[in-house]
Image 1 (cartoon, rainbow, N blue to C red):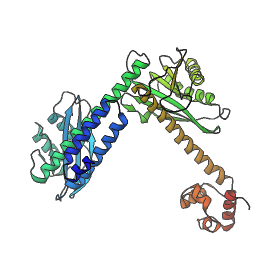
Image 2 (cartoon, rainbow, N blue to C red):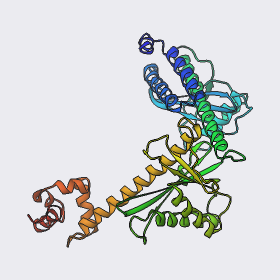
Image 3 (cartoon, rainbow, N blue to C red):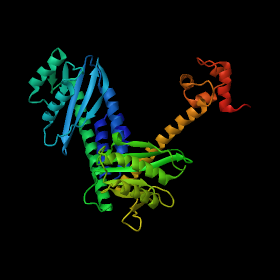
Length: 417
């Protein structure tokens, strides 16, 4: 309530500073979900600020601010076109450790604008004036075909915009550093829990999803020290097994995945999490042995007796009894995140495969429905569910669908009666 009063009084910076302090305190206490909520509140306030402040400008303008610290940096770019704020974006340049803000900004300007098919406005407001600003202005002007100026000391409203961009960069950097610290703490906790020589650099997790054994899909998600590597995620449609045999599904998925990696098509993880208990763990071990894959730590993640988060049991080949971590353990939170992501990715793949199969199975069994007519029907009614609710007269309005064919389609969904 106090924050709301401050916000309405116009003391937005006080509110943001308070939220930043709470975010950092929550991250330090390993309360990551609470820290994320504070971060989202800060982002929402900043968006309101942006809409409030960018007014009175009629031309094109970019505002670039940089903040550096903790071996990282953040560049905030605000884009204004014809007086309208089109939003802002945060960039986190690599290799910025030990470099000053002006040097970072200079490198960003060159990489962002030069040699690209990108509009360069006549004026760039910058938080720090680079030493090579004259050379940059000359290069930017040559690319734009008109004079381009860098300004670091604007007045009036523009000074307020630049100050806000600097504040955004500082807050975003602090949030990123807090997130990096929490991620590092989780990895170090996992290293300790699993008695590893060093924190893992790459982790993978598999999960299986199906409906009563049909349309089985296996998922593989990949994490590194910074979080999920979604470009490395993979799904496997599982066929040729006894419906509902999760062990066989896991064997097939692992064999297809790691046979490719053995051919050099990717990198092996240090840890492979399997969603399941000792049986799934043994199935995974046998496949990796068959493929000759070594140096991968296998960990089975099984839900407890009540199947509640925080009750997970971890199975390892070299341990007789499962490893049970404290419900508040950062290592367990990381494992839960990876396991839940594998579960989500498997379910979404299964649902997509099941939906596609059902669409084909219903419509392809109707004589006279080819690919083009099927596409027209699904497009006009917004999918199979909409088509199933349509009447004969509505279906007959689709191009290429006669009254007789419309009746057959209707009967396919509702039966003859």
